Image 1 (cartoon, rainbow, N blue to C red):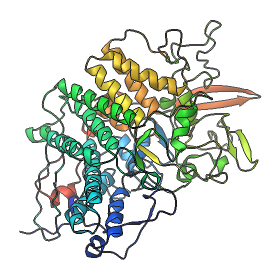
Image 2 (image 1 turned 90 degrees about the horizontal axis):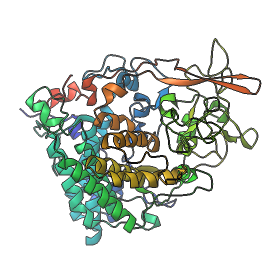
Image 3 (image 1 turned 45 degrees about the vertical axis):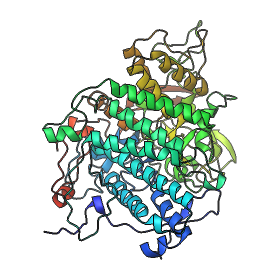
Image 4 (image 1 turned 90 degrees about the vertical axis):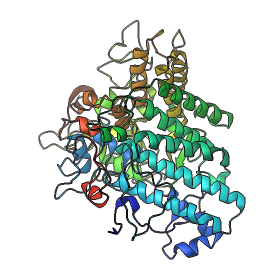
Length: 601
């Protein structure tokens, strides 16, 4: 029988988005609804604008703000709040991120649930894969130049590979559609490709299109896909493929499941391939003018500032967006014009930041002979400077519209931005912190300038960490040291007398692995990596069965007392083995019977 297609795999999508060049970037856009497939590809401008429509969702999962909002423009909750990075103000059992962190994922969502926690990642990815295929099927009849056809085909193929990369880190192997564009009357019953087939497909696509793309663009085209982005994404995909969850740590229960959730056996050469890809990406990026943004006039300023710069040398793949106060309106304190702050960093995340000496706070304690060590009575002094640009903590200065200048943010018990205890003023879901990353302390939701930032979907720093990790696993520990020292230097960490920036000399592979894992948590916080990193390391049973902690602060006169406590709303997090992958929706399996379910669901 023929099956009409209402499956997420083959969803029919709107044809085009028309983008305006009103600002400085071609990918800032607005919607035009008066187009169809015929009129779009008969016109050169509309052909290009259709492709920009495929770009429009590229950042929907950035910093993981998509499990509740369904798009990349709103901030509600996502993977940061579904792992150990942060807490959300809502904690009802039907909230998608709560379903994740309580280990309640299921292929059938209970009545009253806001949304499948996995629906957006699945639906948007396949919708955009179909968009890319429509573009590739039609662009040759467009009146655009031959050179532009070649370039835009490569861009569309990158975007298709990008969306597949999102799918496989959520679900494992998924159906590979090739260039096929299915129609509503088509019979659809496509099986899931193996994880290995998906990785090979993505990598082969990226290799094939790299020569067809420039490494850089002019200002008008800033934000378009580059050959550098191709190599960087290849680095990420191969790092995942080499990681323990996929590389021999298979959790499949049947032969069919084992094929879709990873490789059957460990192969050390996968780490070699990942290291080679990361090194090639770094060398290629450096040769084409990409570099860490450095400014240590204030320790760590370069790390903090790069996220607020629309154009910089560190972002290898950008999610373009018009200037906004999206983050400020959702995450800053009440005193900075936010009626209800949505999410806050955890003490668990803050504890990952070491000292300015580059050492763990547990061992690098302040003393007369170590004045730059950690002081529990003054816990935000002498810390890794990246902490200052990741969270807002008690007494941090921030622009206050009421005074027109920077004033301290108070997060102690009983004040507007602090922890509410026994009916006092404050927030019942407080953690003692607010998010700062990607924001500037010279603006607030209710005053100050609007930031003209973009979303750094792949940063050079990530690729450096990819190389450090893969090189270490490939027994090249020297290369891991080199990358970490460069990142710590940019972070404003003190070099020390040995020039190691706090790194213990002569570490073993196992010791270096732990350091790299922590470095990723610190450097890449709130960028959507932690949730998937812990999974691919196959450490989630250890790391994500935990208690979410906050910092409760008491003020007595001018003295502050700091006390780590479980957060008020639902502190205990649960992770089950099945949760290493998201389930395929049962409604999708019912529509496409060849699909098999992930293990444990």
